[in-house]
Image 1 (cartoon, helix red, strand yellow):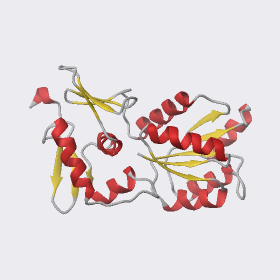
Image 2 (cartoon, rainbow, N blue to C red; image 1 turned 90 degrees about the vertical axis):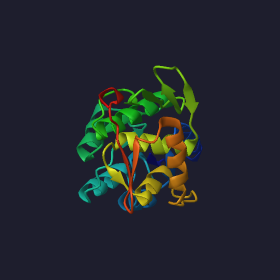
Image 3 (tube, rainbow, N blue to C red; image 1 turned 120 degrees about the vertical axis):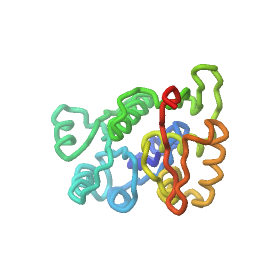
Image 4 (spheres, rainbow, N blue to C red; image 1 turned 135 degrees about the horizontal axis):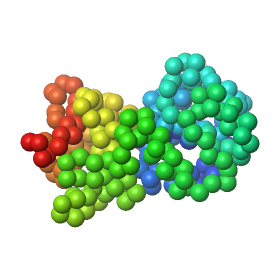
Length: 226
């Protein structure tokens, strides 16, 4: 999943960027309001972490501009302004959640997962299909009946998680590339075929269906019904 981190504290931004990458996100970052506003309007993010106290443009003004432009990605506000009325202003501007500084990264990570689950109407706390469970904390694939655990590379994990959050949808290579790579990473949509092949080796060939000239569809059927 692709995430935009907007934070002007250089030390905190670098720390969070590294933690979010380890948590399986493709992370872009901005340290000022102008760049943040532009990226949020032009790029297709799955979720945004937005600080309020930014140079050039305040966070709430940026958020209002995104919402006015019809940008509906989940936005989690991250700020030292932790009074109840600050939270109300944030929610009125279109925020989806709010974390006050200081905070523990584990809480931020779980709130982001919850936002993504709600965004994709997934009520379960775990991403499951057939006999498999995607362990988001370990970035591993677990076969429940056998107990076998397969560790996933960063790209494999991002790709499988994106498939699981979009079951039944035909996803083009370009769309998948946009959501599993950060802005400054080397993107090659043809490499998606390689990672799809690797995932099929781990989960079998039936779950990821190829639509020639269109992309791939994840078919999260129940194996007991087949």
